[in-house]
Length: 403
Image 1 (tube, rainbow, N blue to C red):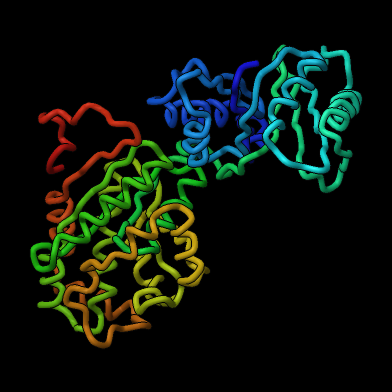
Image 2 (image 1 turned 180 degrees about the vertical axis):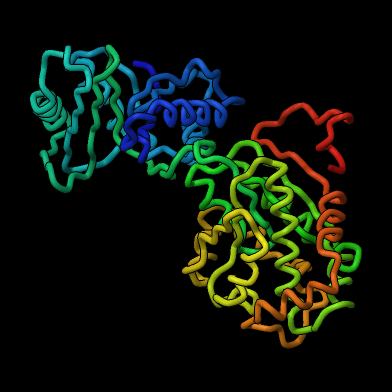
């Protein structure tokens, strides 16, 4: 009787011709999430489930905690591996239930291995009868206090009594790469998380106005990226100095258009970084009507400067919904700390909420847009983050310093 964790795949079970591609990526991600805890060889299986053998010195709870951050998993089941016979099923179920208090029970068997001669319903009946007599309880097939799950597959059987809910979604890495405009607030980390859940690998881009404001936002964003790296295992953060570009916009354009012009410039810079990273889209934390730059018209005017699609996964959510999700994914306590946002630097009193595209284009004629974009990209620095500590970047590696 060996301790194991069985993890079931989420929506990739609906894939057909390319299902193996999704399962291979999910297997890589599971092994990557556990790489400092367990060797890759203990994670095996496929076609709907993986089985993870738990070594004696390793806590099953620690393994399950890591797996709860792996997108593509429907549930995580801590149990035991036993031989394919009813007596072993009964013994395993008894051991798993011995410290629990319950009055009703159900046995739920799945027989993927059709070479096992006893049908699922008969297994349910035999094991259920044994447990009812052993613990003096009764069967309840609709609302039991405890359920014993038995999976008969791969010349063995796995028995467990609980299913931890997995994060669902698609494995990170199957949907390509995107660039996220990441602030230190609540919204953009949640938007990044949602794109990871759809299988995208996220490259982060943060704009700051240091030394005109404090360096707090950069440190806060680094903490956010560390949290988000738990979901995609490896991350890259580009830190872009934006204060000089803002000063030029302030000096050369109408005050009411500053915020829209800031955002258009940020999109251009993010697009340049995205193309360098071979990313296919840009993602932002914008929510319709939340602030002046996020009206429908202003979003359209901001979109106009990008050749890449801009995704806004939070566009229909309100602030309370976003903050609730931030709590769930672990970014809330970091985002709630005060910081100097670059968009608050030199912000006008009355920003335009319904920008005229022609007026915005006219205002930009006073700016050397291409030079500003190129300058900001060249001054950006890149930092790497990893779930499991890796050797430091060599001093000759370009991404250790300026691009």
